[in-house]
Amino acid sequence: MPLGILSVIIGYLLGSIPTAYIVSRVRKGTDIRTIGSRNMGGANVMREIGTHEGVFVGLFDIAKGAGAILIARALDVSELWVFGTGFAAVVGHNFPLFAGFRGGRGSATVIGIFLVLAPKATLVTLAVVAIPFFASRKFGGAIIIGFALLPLFAWLLEGSLSLVLYALAIDLFMLIRNLPDIRRVLAKGIITDMIYDRQRKKTK
Image 1 (cartoon, one colour):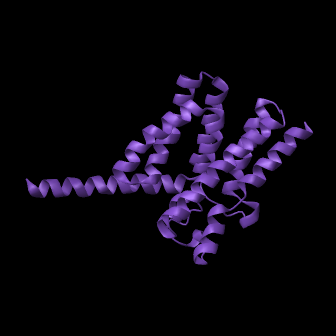
Image 2: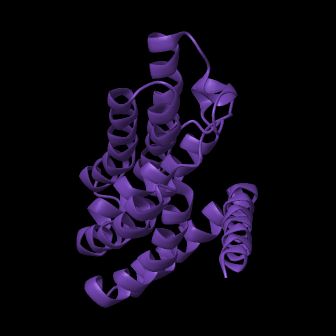
Image 3: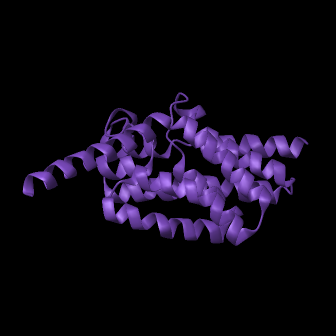
């Protein structure tokens, strides 16, 4: 039990490392949470600070999730505590101790978690998500698709009910946490379709 609690605490502290905040402060002297999409993640850093900085932040945030799971496994705790440690890392990214509990969405951290827990399912999900992302350049919409598909691929490729349930639990947390952003993405899609339909009617 003490090792399980220690594992969860380590997971939260890892998740709390505000990579995007640190990088944006060092490179531009600004708080990434006040510019662009105001999300403390790699995509916003890439748009507002620079490509290399954004890639670094994304990879580091992935490493936070992967590292939390690897540490939990190294401590030889039960699967339930491993799952709890991964979830704690996501909570840490969303509500970081080291940045006034104002964090980001945690998408990269979730990717890191499942790269360790369900590598085949995660890689296939990322490959599928890459299609709408490169077609539309809309990161938010691609991530929504990815989180929807991850439990399915976890079942098909990993064959683990516990992983499927865990992926669904993470999805539910991310849905609740990012509901305003999801609504905005869906609204933008609807507006775009409306504009396209009007333009098409004018050309007829």
